[in-house]
Length: 411
Image 1 (cartoon, rainbow, N blue to C red):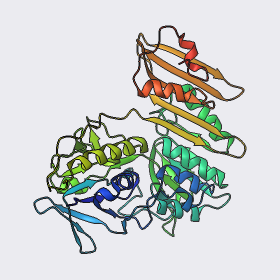
Image 2 (tube, helix red, strand yellow; image 1 turned 180 degrees about the horizontal axis):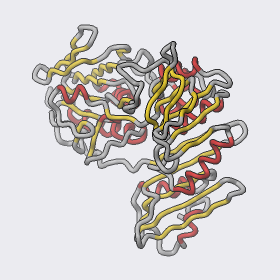
Image 3 (tube, rainbow, N blue to C red; image 1 turned 45 degrees about the vertical axis):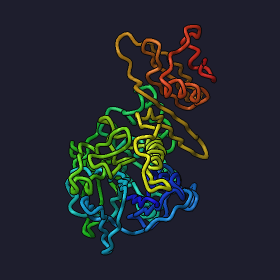
């Protein structure tokens, strides 16, 4: 007897889970996009023209493409779809991902004006790519990881790019001020005009209802033929909420990635574990691997009984490293960030800066633990540092802290 497992969502988490389960279960993956699963992390490389869409495809798994799940009948264990079909499940996995945040700007109604684009899917990428021509005026709203990636890609395509960031510095969730300053210099060298502490109030459209400018809070207008909204993402929890599952910021799950319904799990951007919604590819993959082990342990054996409760693997959280490669023919830049780069009173801080090479390394040590770090331009030490941080290992007393910034991390 084989379990019927239904996965809603054909993105990174859903596709990984289906591959890990393999032939051990009958798996139906319901994917709303028409595309086969792909690596969303590399969308900026497609926009820059560096990769074709086929290059970022994930190892293929069978997916019912272009099908939207509309509701979950928990009592009958059915998933209802917009095409009129219903799919029965023994276990349901919500891997619904996240939606781009559309800020409450004047000029944004039920639909986006022509020329205004989110940047979350391969279709978003294709629409942006079709609109970009050399010299086109583009404004990117949001200076986080996604906004920086989009601005760099548009500049590579020859657009005149302005990046508007509300916060004090770029990628403020991952980088400290010094690293962010170097990142800003890198973007400006590519021709990107960067504005920080800059709040966007609304959009202005022309007679053809296409966007013509981005209006700032002080009334200043940035001329724009293309606007990219890169203001973050929000967990996609509508199905879970309508089904009566416990939802806070994301769909609440336990260490088995199980929701408040014992027959339903959630993984990836939509899942909230111990109060944390990661929203990154690394944790999504780890959650999928853990859930595959949990589900395999619960599958009926040859006698038709399930060996429940024996899975040894549990999800205890992910210590995620942020990596970004800003590739360029003239000035490539790599950066990595982990943990909290902002020291508390009593923390030890070690940093090295090389303005000539545009390199910067910094680590924060609390007691005998590495709690955060930023590396920009030179990532030779990132492997050893990441292993020490991810493993939450005590640093050896014999290693001077300065050696943490050597190529082997001093470890």
